[in-house]
Image (cartoon, rainbow, N blue to C red; front, side, top):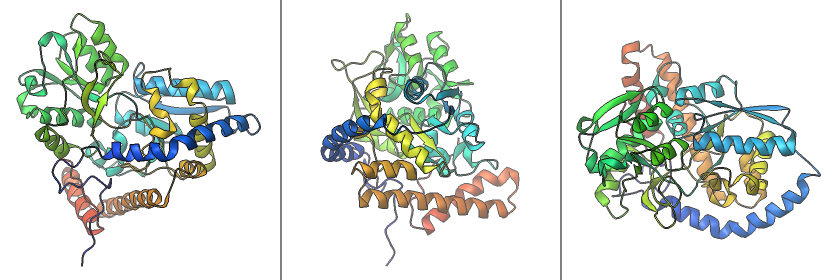
Length: 414
C-alpha cells in the first residue's frame, strides 16, 4: 500500500476544502500554552547568566534585509543595536530591493544571515527566479522568525472608495520585476476578489520602495505590504490615505482561491499597522515576516548563541518597530514550511520547546530539500536546452517530489 504524501507543512492538506483556516493559530495556541511559563523562567535564568558567559560573534556581522525604512530592515537594525550594546558587534544591514539582491549575498557568503520574506520559501522550492540555471533550490534554514500582530495585504488608496478586492477590477496594480515574494501574494489577493492580472492594469516597478512611492504619487492604486511596513505610513499620511480590503475569514470562496495560489497564508486579525489598531482591526491573512535565515553550514554554536541573544534581549527591542513584537519565543512557529537550523534547534531544546514531533517535522522538511537538490543535479546533467530549462525543471521537480511521497505544491511560473 502506498504511503500518504508528506505535505511541506502538515495540516495543510490540499485535498480538503479551505485547508488553511486556523492551522498556525491552533499550532501557536498549543505552543503558547506549553511554553509561556518556560519562556519567562528561561529568560530570567539566561539573562542572569549572560554577563558570566557572553557569546563571541566577532567584531562584525552582516545581514541582508529589505529596503531602508521597511519593517524588516528596521527590526534588523534594532537587533543590531542589542548586538552592539551587549557584545560589541557591529551589524551591517545590507538593503536589497528584491529577492535576488537579498539572497545572493547570503549564497556568496557576503552576509551571514538574511532577514528575508516569503522568498525564503520560493528559494527552497526552486521556483520562479530560483528555477533559473544559476540558482536552483536552496537548503535554507530558519534561525528565528517574527510572527507579529500585523497582516500582509494589498493596501489601496482610500480616495478610490474601494472596499473589497473585487473592487480592484480595472484599477492599476503594481508588478515588481524579479520579486515573486511581492507578486505572488498580490496574485492571491486578487484571486480572493475573483480577479486575475487580466482584470487589472499591470504597472511594472523596479523595487518595493518605488512601488509604494507610485501609490502615493498616483501612478498606481494599490500595493502589497505587511501592514506595519514603513512606506505604508507615507500613504496613510498622504492626501490619498490608506485602506486595507479584508480577506473575510468566513468567505470560503476567497480562501479557497487564495489557497490555490499560495500555501503559506493563514487567517489572522491584525491589530497593528497603518490605519489599523486594536479598536480598528484588519481581518485578513499573514505569514511570518521577517524570517531570519542562514545556510546549514553556518556554525551551530554561533546560530544557537544568536537565537539566545534575540530571545533574552527581546524586551530591549520589541518596541523598536511595530512588527518587532513577533520575535517573542512563544510566537515562534516551530513547525512551518522551511526547516530550522541545528543551532536554533539546540537552543529550543534547551528551553524544553522542541519535542519529538517537531523534530520529525523538521527532518521531513530537510528531506524535502534533499529531494529537490538531487532532482536539480539530475536536471542539470540532462543537457536540457536553455529555452526549455524552466518548463522541464518544473516537470522534473514535481515528479521527484511525488516519487518521494511529497506534495509538489505546484506554483505556476509568471
